[in-house]
Image (cartoon, rainbow, N blue to C red; front, side):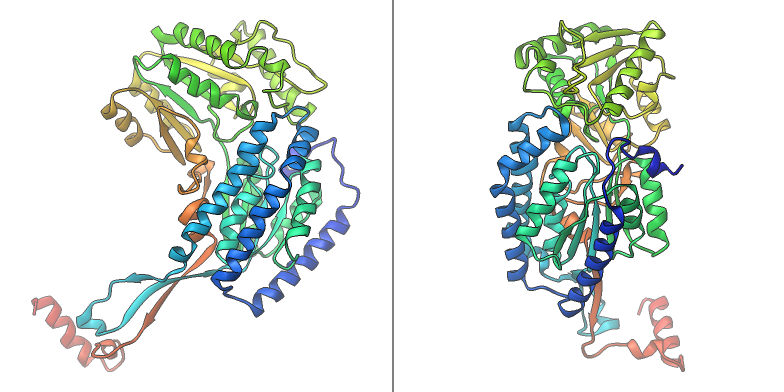
Length: 487
């Protein structure tokens, strides 16, 4: 069984993957042909496409909220609006504001003695036809969000939503079909066979967001075509509470971030490292925050349901393992029951977990937060560096020199000081991983460059020494001698 097959949703079986694969092939060919006749869309065309994207998102706000509830079982509408709609619109607006600046050639230095009056610059040109394999946790933010920079860069795009979110995938296909010519943007829904065909398509660039295991397979399939890839993966993102930093505001940042999508976020806090003498205070602040901010959190409208019964079973099995090992679990609500129908699950802290537990070995992706006591910050940093590089790293403390030292001595895709996950939400800040947490960047100018061919261009002028590189090399010998003698 392949890794892709092992993580495929056993409940969702698209009716006709063969038709979707045919649609993928036909649309890819159509977009390649269209790109061949328009390799560098004007700024006016790019702006029109971005405006169409914004209009598409705003016109479908209510439907997007409905689709998220249908797929997750429970999903707070304000979160849908804020993250999946307005977050994407804000990203597109930021791109529109800076597009003219980004499209300008970037001038490079030349050496007058050697190159005369030559000009050199980097020209950012569209790569061509770009594929985007989207995860289930943010079905619109991670499909239409990167589309902003892909379209701004002049590309044509095909999107593959997750089969775990069929309502969102169907709506996205409907939205895109109404807003764009399929030769510009198209959506292909389907299951495992479609995902494998998608990864094997000879894209001019491919973005995959998901877990590292599937990321390996996507990269392997892309390698057969030498397709450049951007991989946005995950990992165990730590929150490091430096000595004296456990207070109400900082714990609110950690727990507040953890309850976004009920922990189903790649840059969520996966575990918190807390000075041993401040663990009890952390637990007390966590309880107080949730009691005030979202009482009866897991039974109300503030919680996002776990995406599928299989994912819910995985999380409950993790907690069962902790109980079997006599570990300490603190549920941040009086009722720790799980609603299997809507897949609502309460937030739990696991205090001082054994290192070999699943919650310490796997990315949790749910409402479970291990609290790991520590006595020595240097040992904490050494432990983080001994593992795989996380997608995000968060450090808390009032001592700026200390928090800067922690950042300087660790490595991660992104980082925050005295907050969490904001690095993944700024339209201006390149977002991506490092090592096992991914490669490449999207968002902002980094995203625009990621989906562009950074073409180096030289325009020859007058008075240069370029002929010194041609045989016979008498001129070259004289030039070398002059350089070495300092003349």
